[in-house]
Image (cartoon, rainbow over all chains, first blue to last red; front, side, top):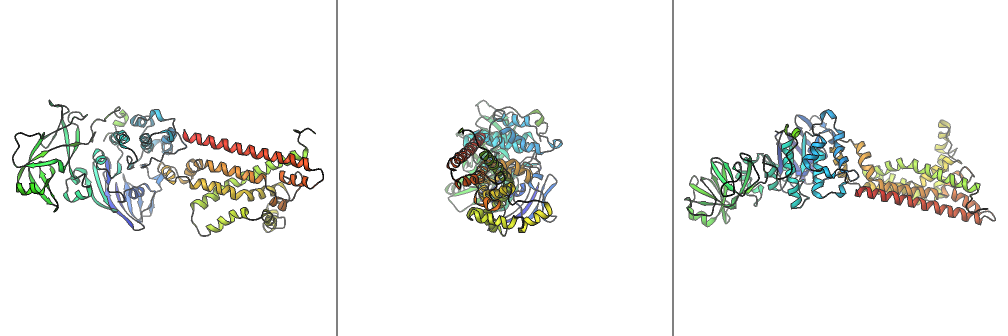
Length: 377
Length: 232
């Protein structure tokens, strides 16, 4: 997918250009008011850019130079709105099939039964949207968009209107569907946790402009982008594989770059890829390997880069085979006389494992439909 | 004379009233929905003028509206002469003219109710339907129109009731001809003008009340059924 567009709305200018992969989840990340929704509304054809070009899977949806502007119903784009937008006068079944019936039979590759099974909405089919909970509504909305057999699925903060329990109810379904169908997903969110769970590719948007676009792991390691990712989210993202689901101590052992990482037990099979996030404030630094310590994870490495914000703390980028961020206080930094290239040990206090991150087993429910799995990317 | 036995005049007036009101409502409904849609959704120069035109019958004295209809659509009127010459249609002094008078008089009520309900339809739902592959016309018929149903029901009942009660414009435009243009209110008026007409007038009065009540009950039932449907 290739997106390049400009639109002025009052004082606000959206001027964004990025390329995304034709499969997998591309996350569109940015603070509220960054123009994320405007951007995907333009992709969907609900908002017309002043100028630009939008191509998805080789199909040109909009091109101001060639005067192409496909209407939304011709774009083959599924859209999951933040507020669901189920048609209130139709039953769940009629909502699901509304778009499916508009899609020519020979172009459908998503079946109603498969979607109903995937999203676990079989018991809701005869209900009206008013009788559904927030999480159920969003699942039906996802199914409805999926059943148009779209070339691209847009999701505009589909979890934003849900409370925490409902979020964890819907998230596994989105993770599952991104694996079950070879449909690229453009996922809008300002919550880094959701993105780490879902996305492979990241586009960072701020004030209507694309700050950076690329592989998620690569972007997360770039120091100049850390300010855009928010102070709370400051840290490293590392792709690992499961070495042992349960080791002798009852923890899950993950492996990356010849290192082992012990984390609280997760439901994953051996050699399944798992993405972990380590907040910079949870990484301490020592010059010698501590002999007696409560730290479970100690990795040897060296200081790659020192970033001094001129505040009470200093950020270090450690090279432990991949990059690992550490945030230490200024007095500690001065005491240790740290220099670039110096060998150190990284002491990791805690690791956040993205639950059910890429390609791990769904947290609950059955596996995806066999037909759907054949389209597994 | 038995109380429940309707006289010929009463039956004629009742039949004609229902016939004229039914046609008036049926004819003005599609145009009313179109006008409501244009007023609610489009922006164009002269929109206020159109809005004013639609609402004019509501504020003008009915006799004035009837007189204007006569001037424009009478056999020798500006439009009426052309209608007769080219299409052979005569509106003055027959039931079709009564339908027109009732439709014009009830039109603003219909448009107001329909427009209100249209403005309350979430355009986000229409956008969602577009992304599901439905073109604008299909979206209108499968999303917008069903969601406007409560307003349309209200508009229909208001317009029907207004048509049943139409007097001034009707008597001015198509006169008071028994069996042709003499609807319930006109028959009632006629009975008040003759000696010993009090009982007949009272009977027509009761009849009018009964019809109005029946219409209200119908609309209430329809509205409830719709609300229940939306609740699932």
